[in-house]
Image (cartoon, rainbow, N blue to C red; front, side, top):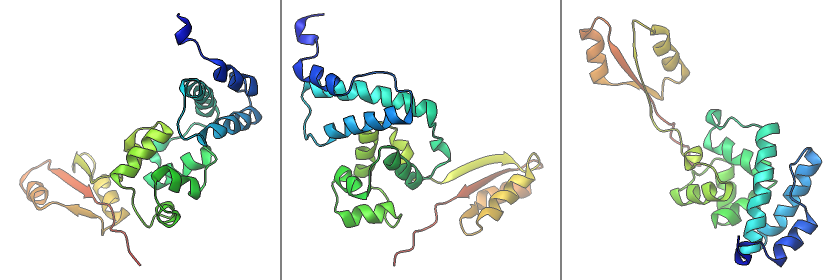
Amino acid sequence: MSNSELPGKKYRQLVKQFPLFELRSEEDLDAAVSAIGVLYDIPFFDADEKTYFEALSVFIERYESRVHPRNFEKMTPLEALKSLLEDNHLIQADLARILHVTSGRASDIYLGKRDLSKEHIALLSDRFKVSANLFLPQPRRVLQTSVAESPALLDEYRAQDRKNVKTSTRSAAKIKAASKPVVTVVATKPKSKRK
């Protein structure tokens, strides 16, 4: 390793302020989050700050995934956003800064009055180092199954929200024509109500 690849003086100063180590407690986590929070105020990282930030982020992520595992698959995009903000000790004002929007727009997003745009999703994905899919609204979910195999499944989907579940005409024709028909159930996202 050449001298140009070694971390510089600023990196060593950051390590003196908060050493890099495997986090073992909530107190360690809080201290690490505080240390990394100082770096968030810097508009552009130099090489040393970036190296330190990335290293400390790894330790924070390891601890959180071990102690506070999240099941994002069961969360809505809004729940995931709120969870990430909370986990990173951020508030709505921080969301406005991350998304480059006004505080009013950030509030509307946080309260679920507005959906995230593609640009917002990209910014959040980059900021929190998570997949953009986490913030995508659940698209129309299509389920194909045999009614003979699981008629209760169709009833369950219809009962969940009759307004948002439709059986396509083509599938209805298949049901009448086949002995073991395939039913396509499409659950659509409810339209948001604007005030």
